[in-house]
Image (cartoon, rainbow, N blue to C red; front, side):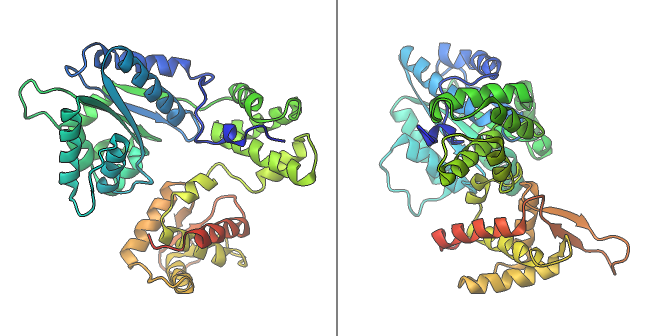
Length: 388
């Protein structure tokens, strides 16, 4: 069925991105000074948009293009794309940056400030320039605050006529974290803000057709299947969801031993995927977040209730932790996990209403079946079996 499955992966960045050409042009305009006068200017840009609106793909493609343009202008620019939801601390992000720089310096046991100093010294010594993208910046800022963003954006403010070697792009799903930032930093980001709107069904059809040519056997996907996927994913405007539907429908066809991806296979795939909960998001969760989510599934799967109380959830999480030979995290940490999972759209929450004694927070799942999510989590937990 597939010529190259990787071409349907969310990590694959094609050489062309349909309906995002204008966004690439805007980024190029904003970074013109960085290219034309390296060292005299740096740039800070904020990219906003819903999940699956092309933010990450556009930024990765732009990073590749800007690196090539810099080389043609006679200087070296290194592009580093960091998923700040996955790299959850300042230390982990700086480690990622240093890995991209290939310093060869042992990093264990160093403080965050020491890592930053190594970054600055290395790029100065080797006459390098950095473009760092912090993807899921909003999630990171809510969790950790603005210290790292402040340090990276103000590295040479106290030096007269210093070389401006670090530019930043922040990617977030919403701008509500603005109140966390220093007013001057927020003001700069607001001036250089690019909004990504959701894809409409017609645009999703174009994206699907473009990927199908590279990924799937010729003629294997009838127009009716493409239309159905575009219509389903069009409700959220999410290209990632559309591509995952196509991929999973292709897997259904493979299992049946047929060479056509029929609309019925798309409907089968949809039963196991929702826009809110995708495998990529689950993979990024910490080990104990997965245990907590597994506890939710095990409480809701056999229950007539749509929600569970936080007290019941914490108790079941303790049992699940023991099952996997883990020490349960503290009450405060469990609450932080719940808040983050709600923020990611994996869990839903509401305050208890009429007919219940007192007020408590109720936790539920969106429209993915608890049994399906439970199975996926158990597979992932078995593969990792390490604390986090």
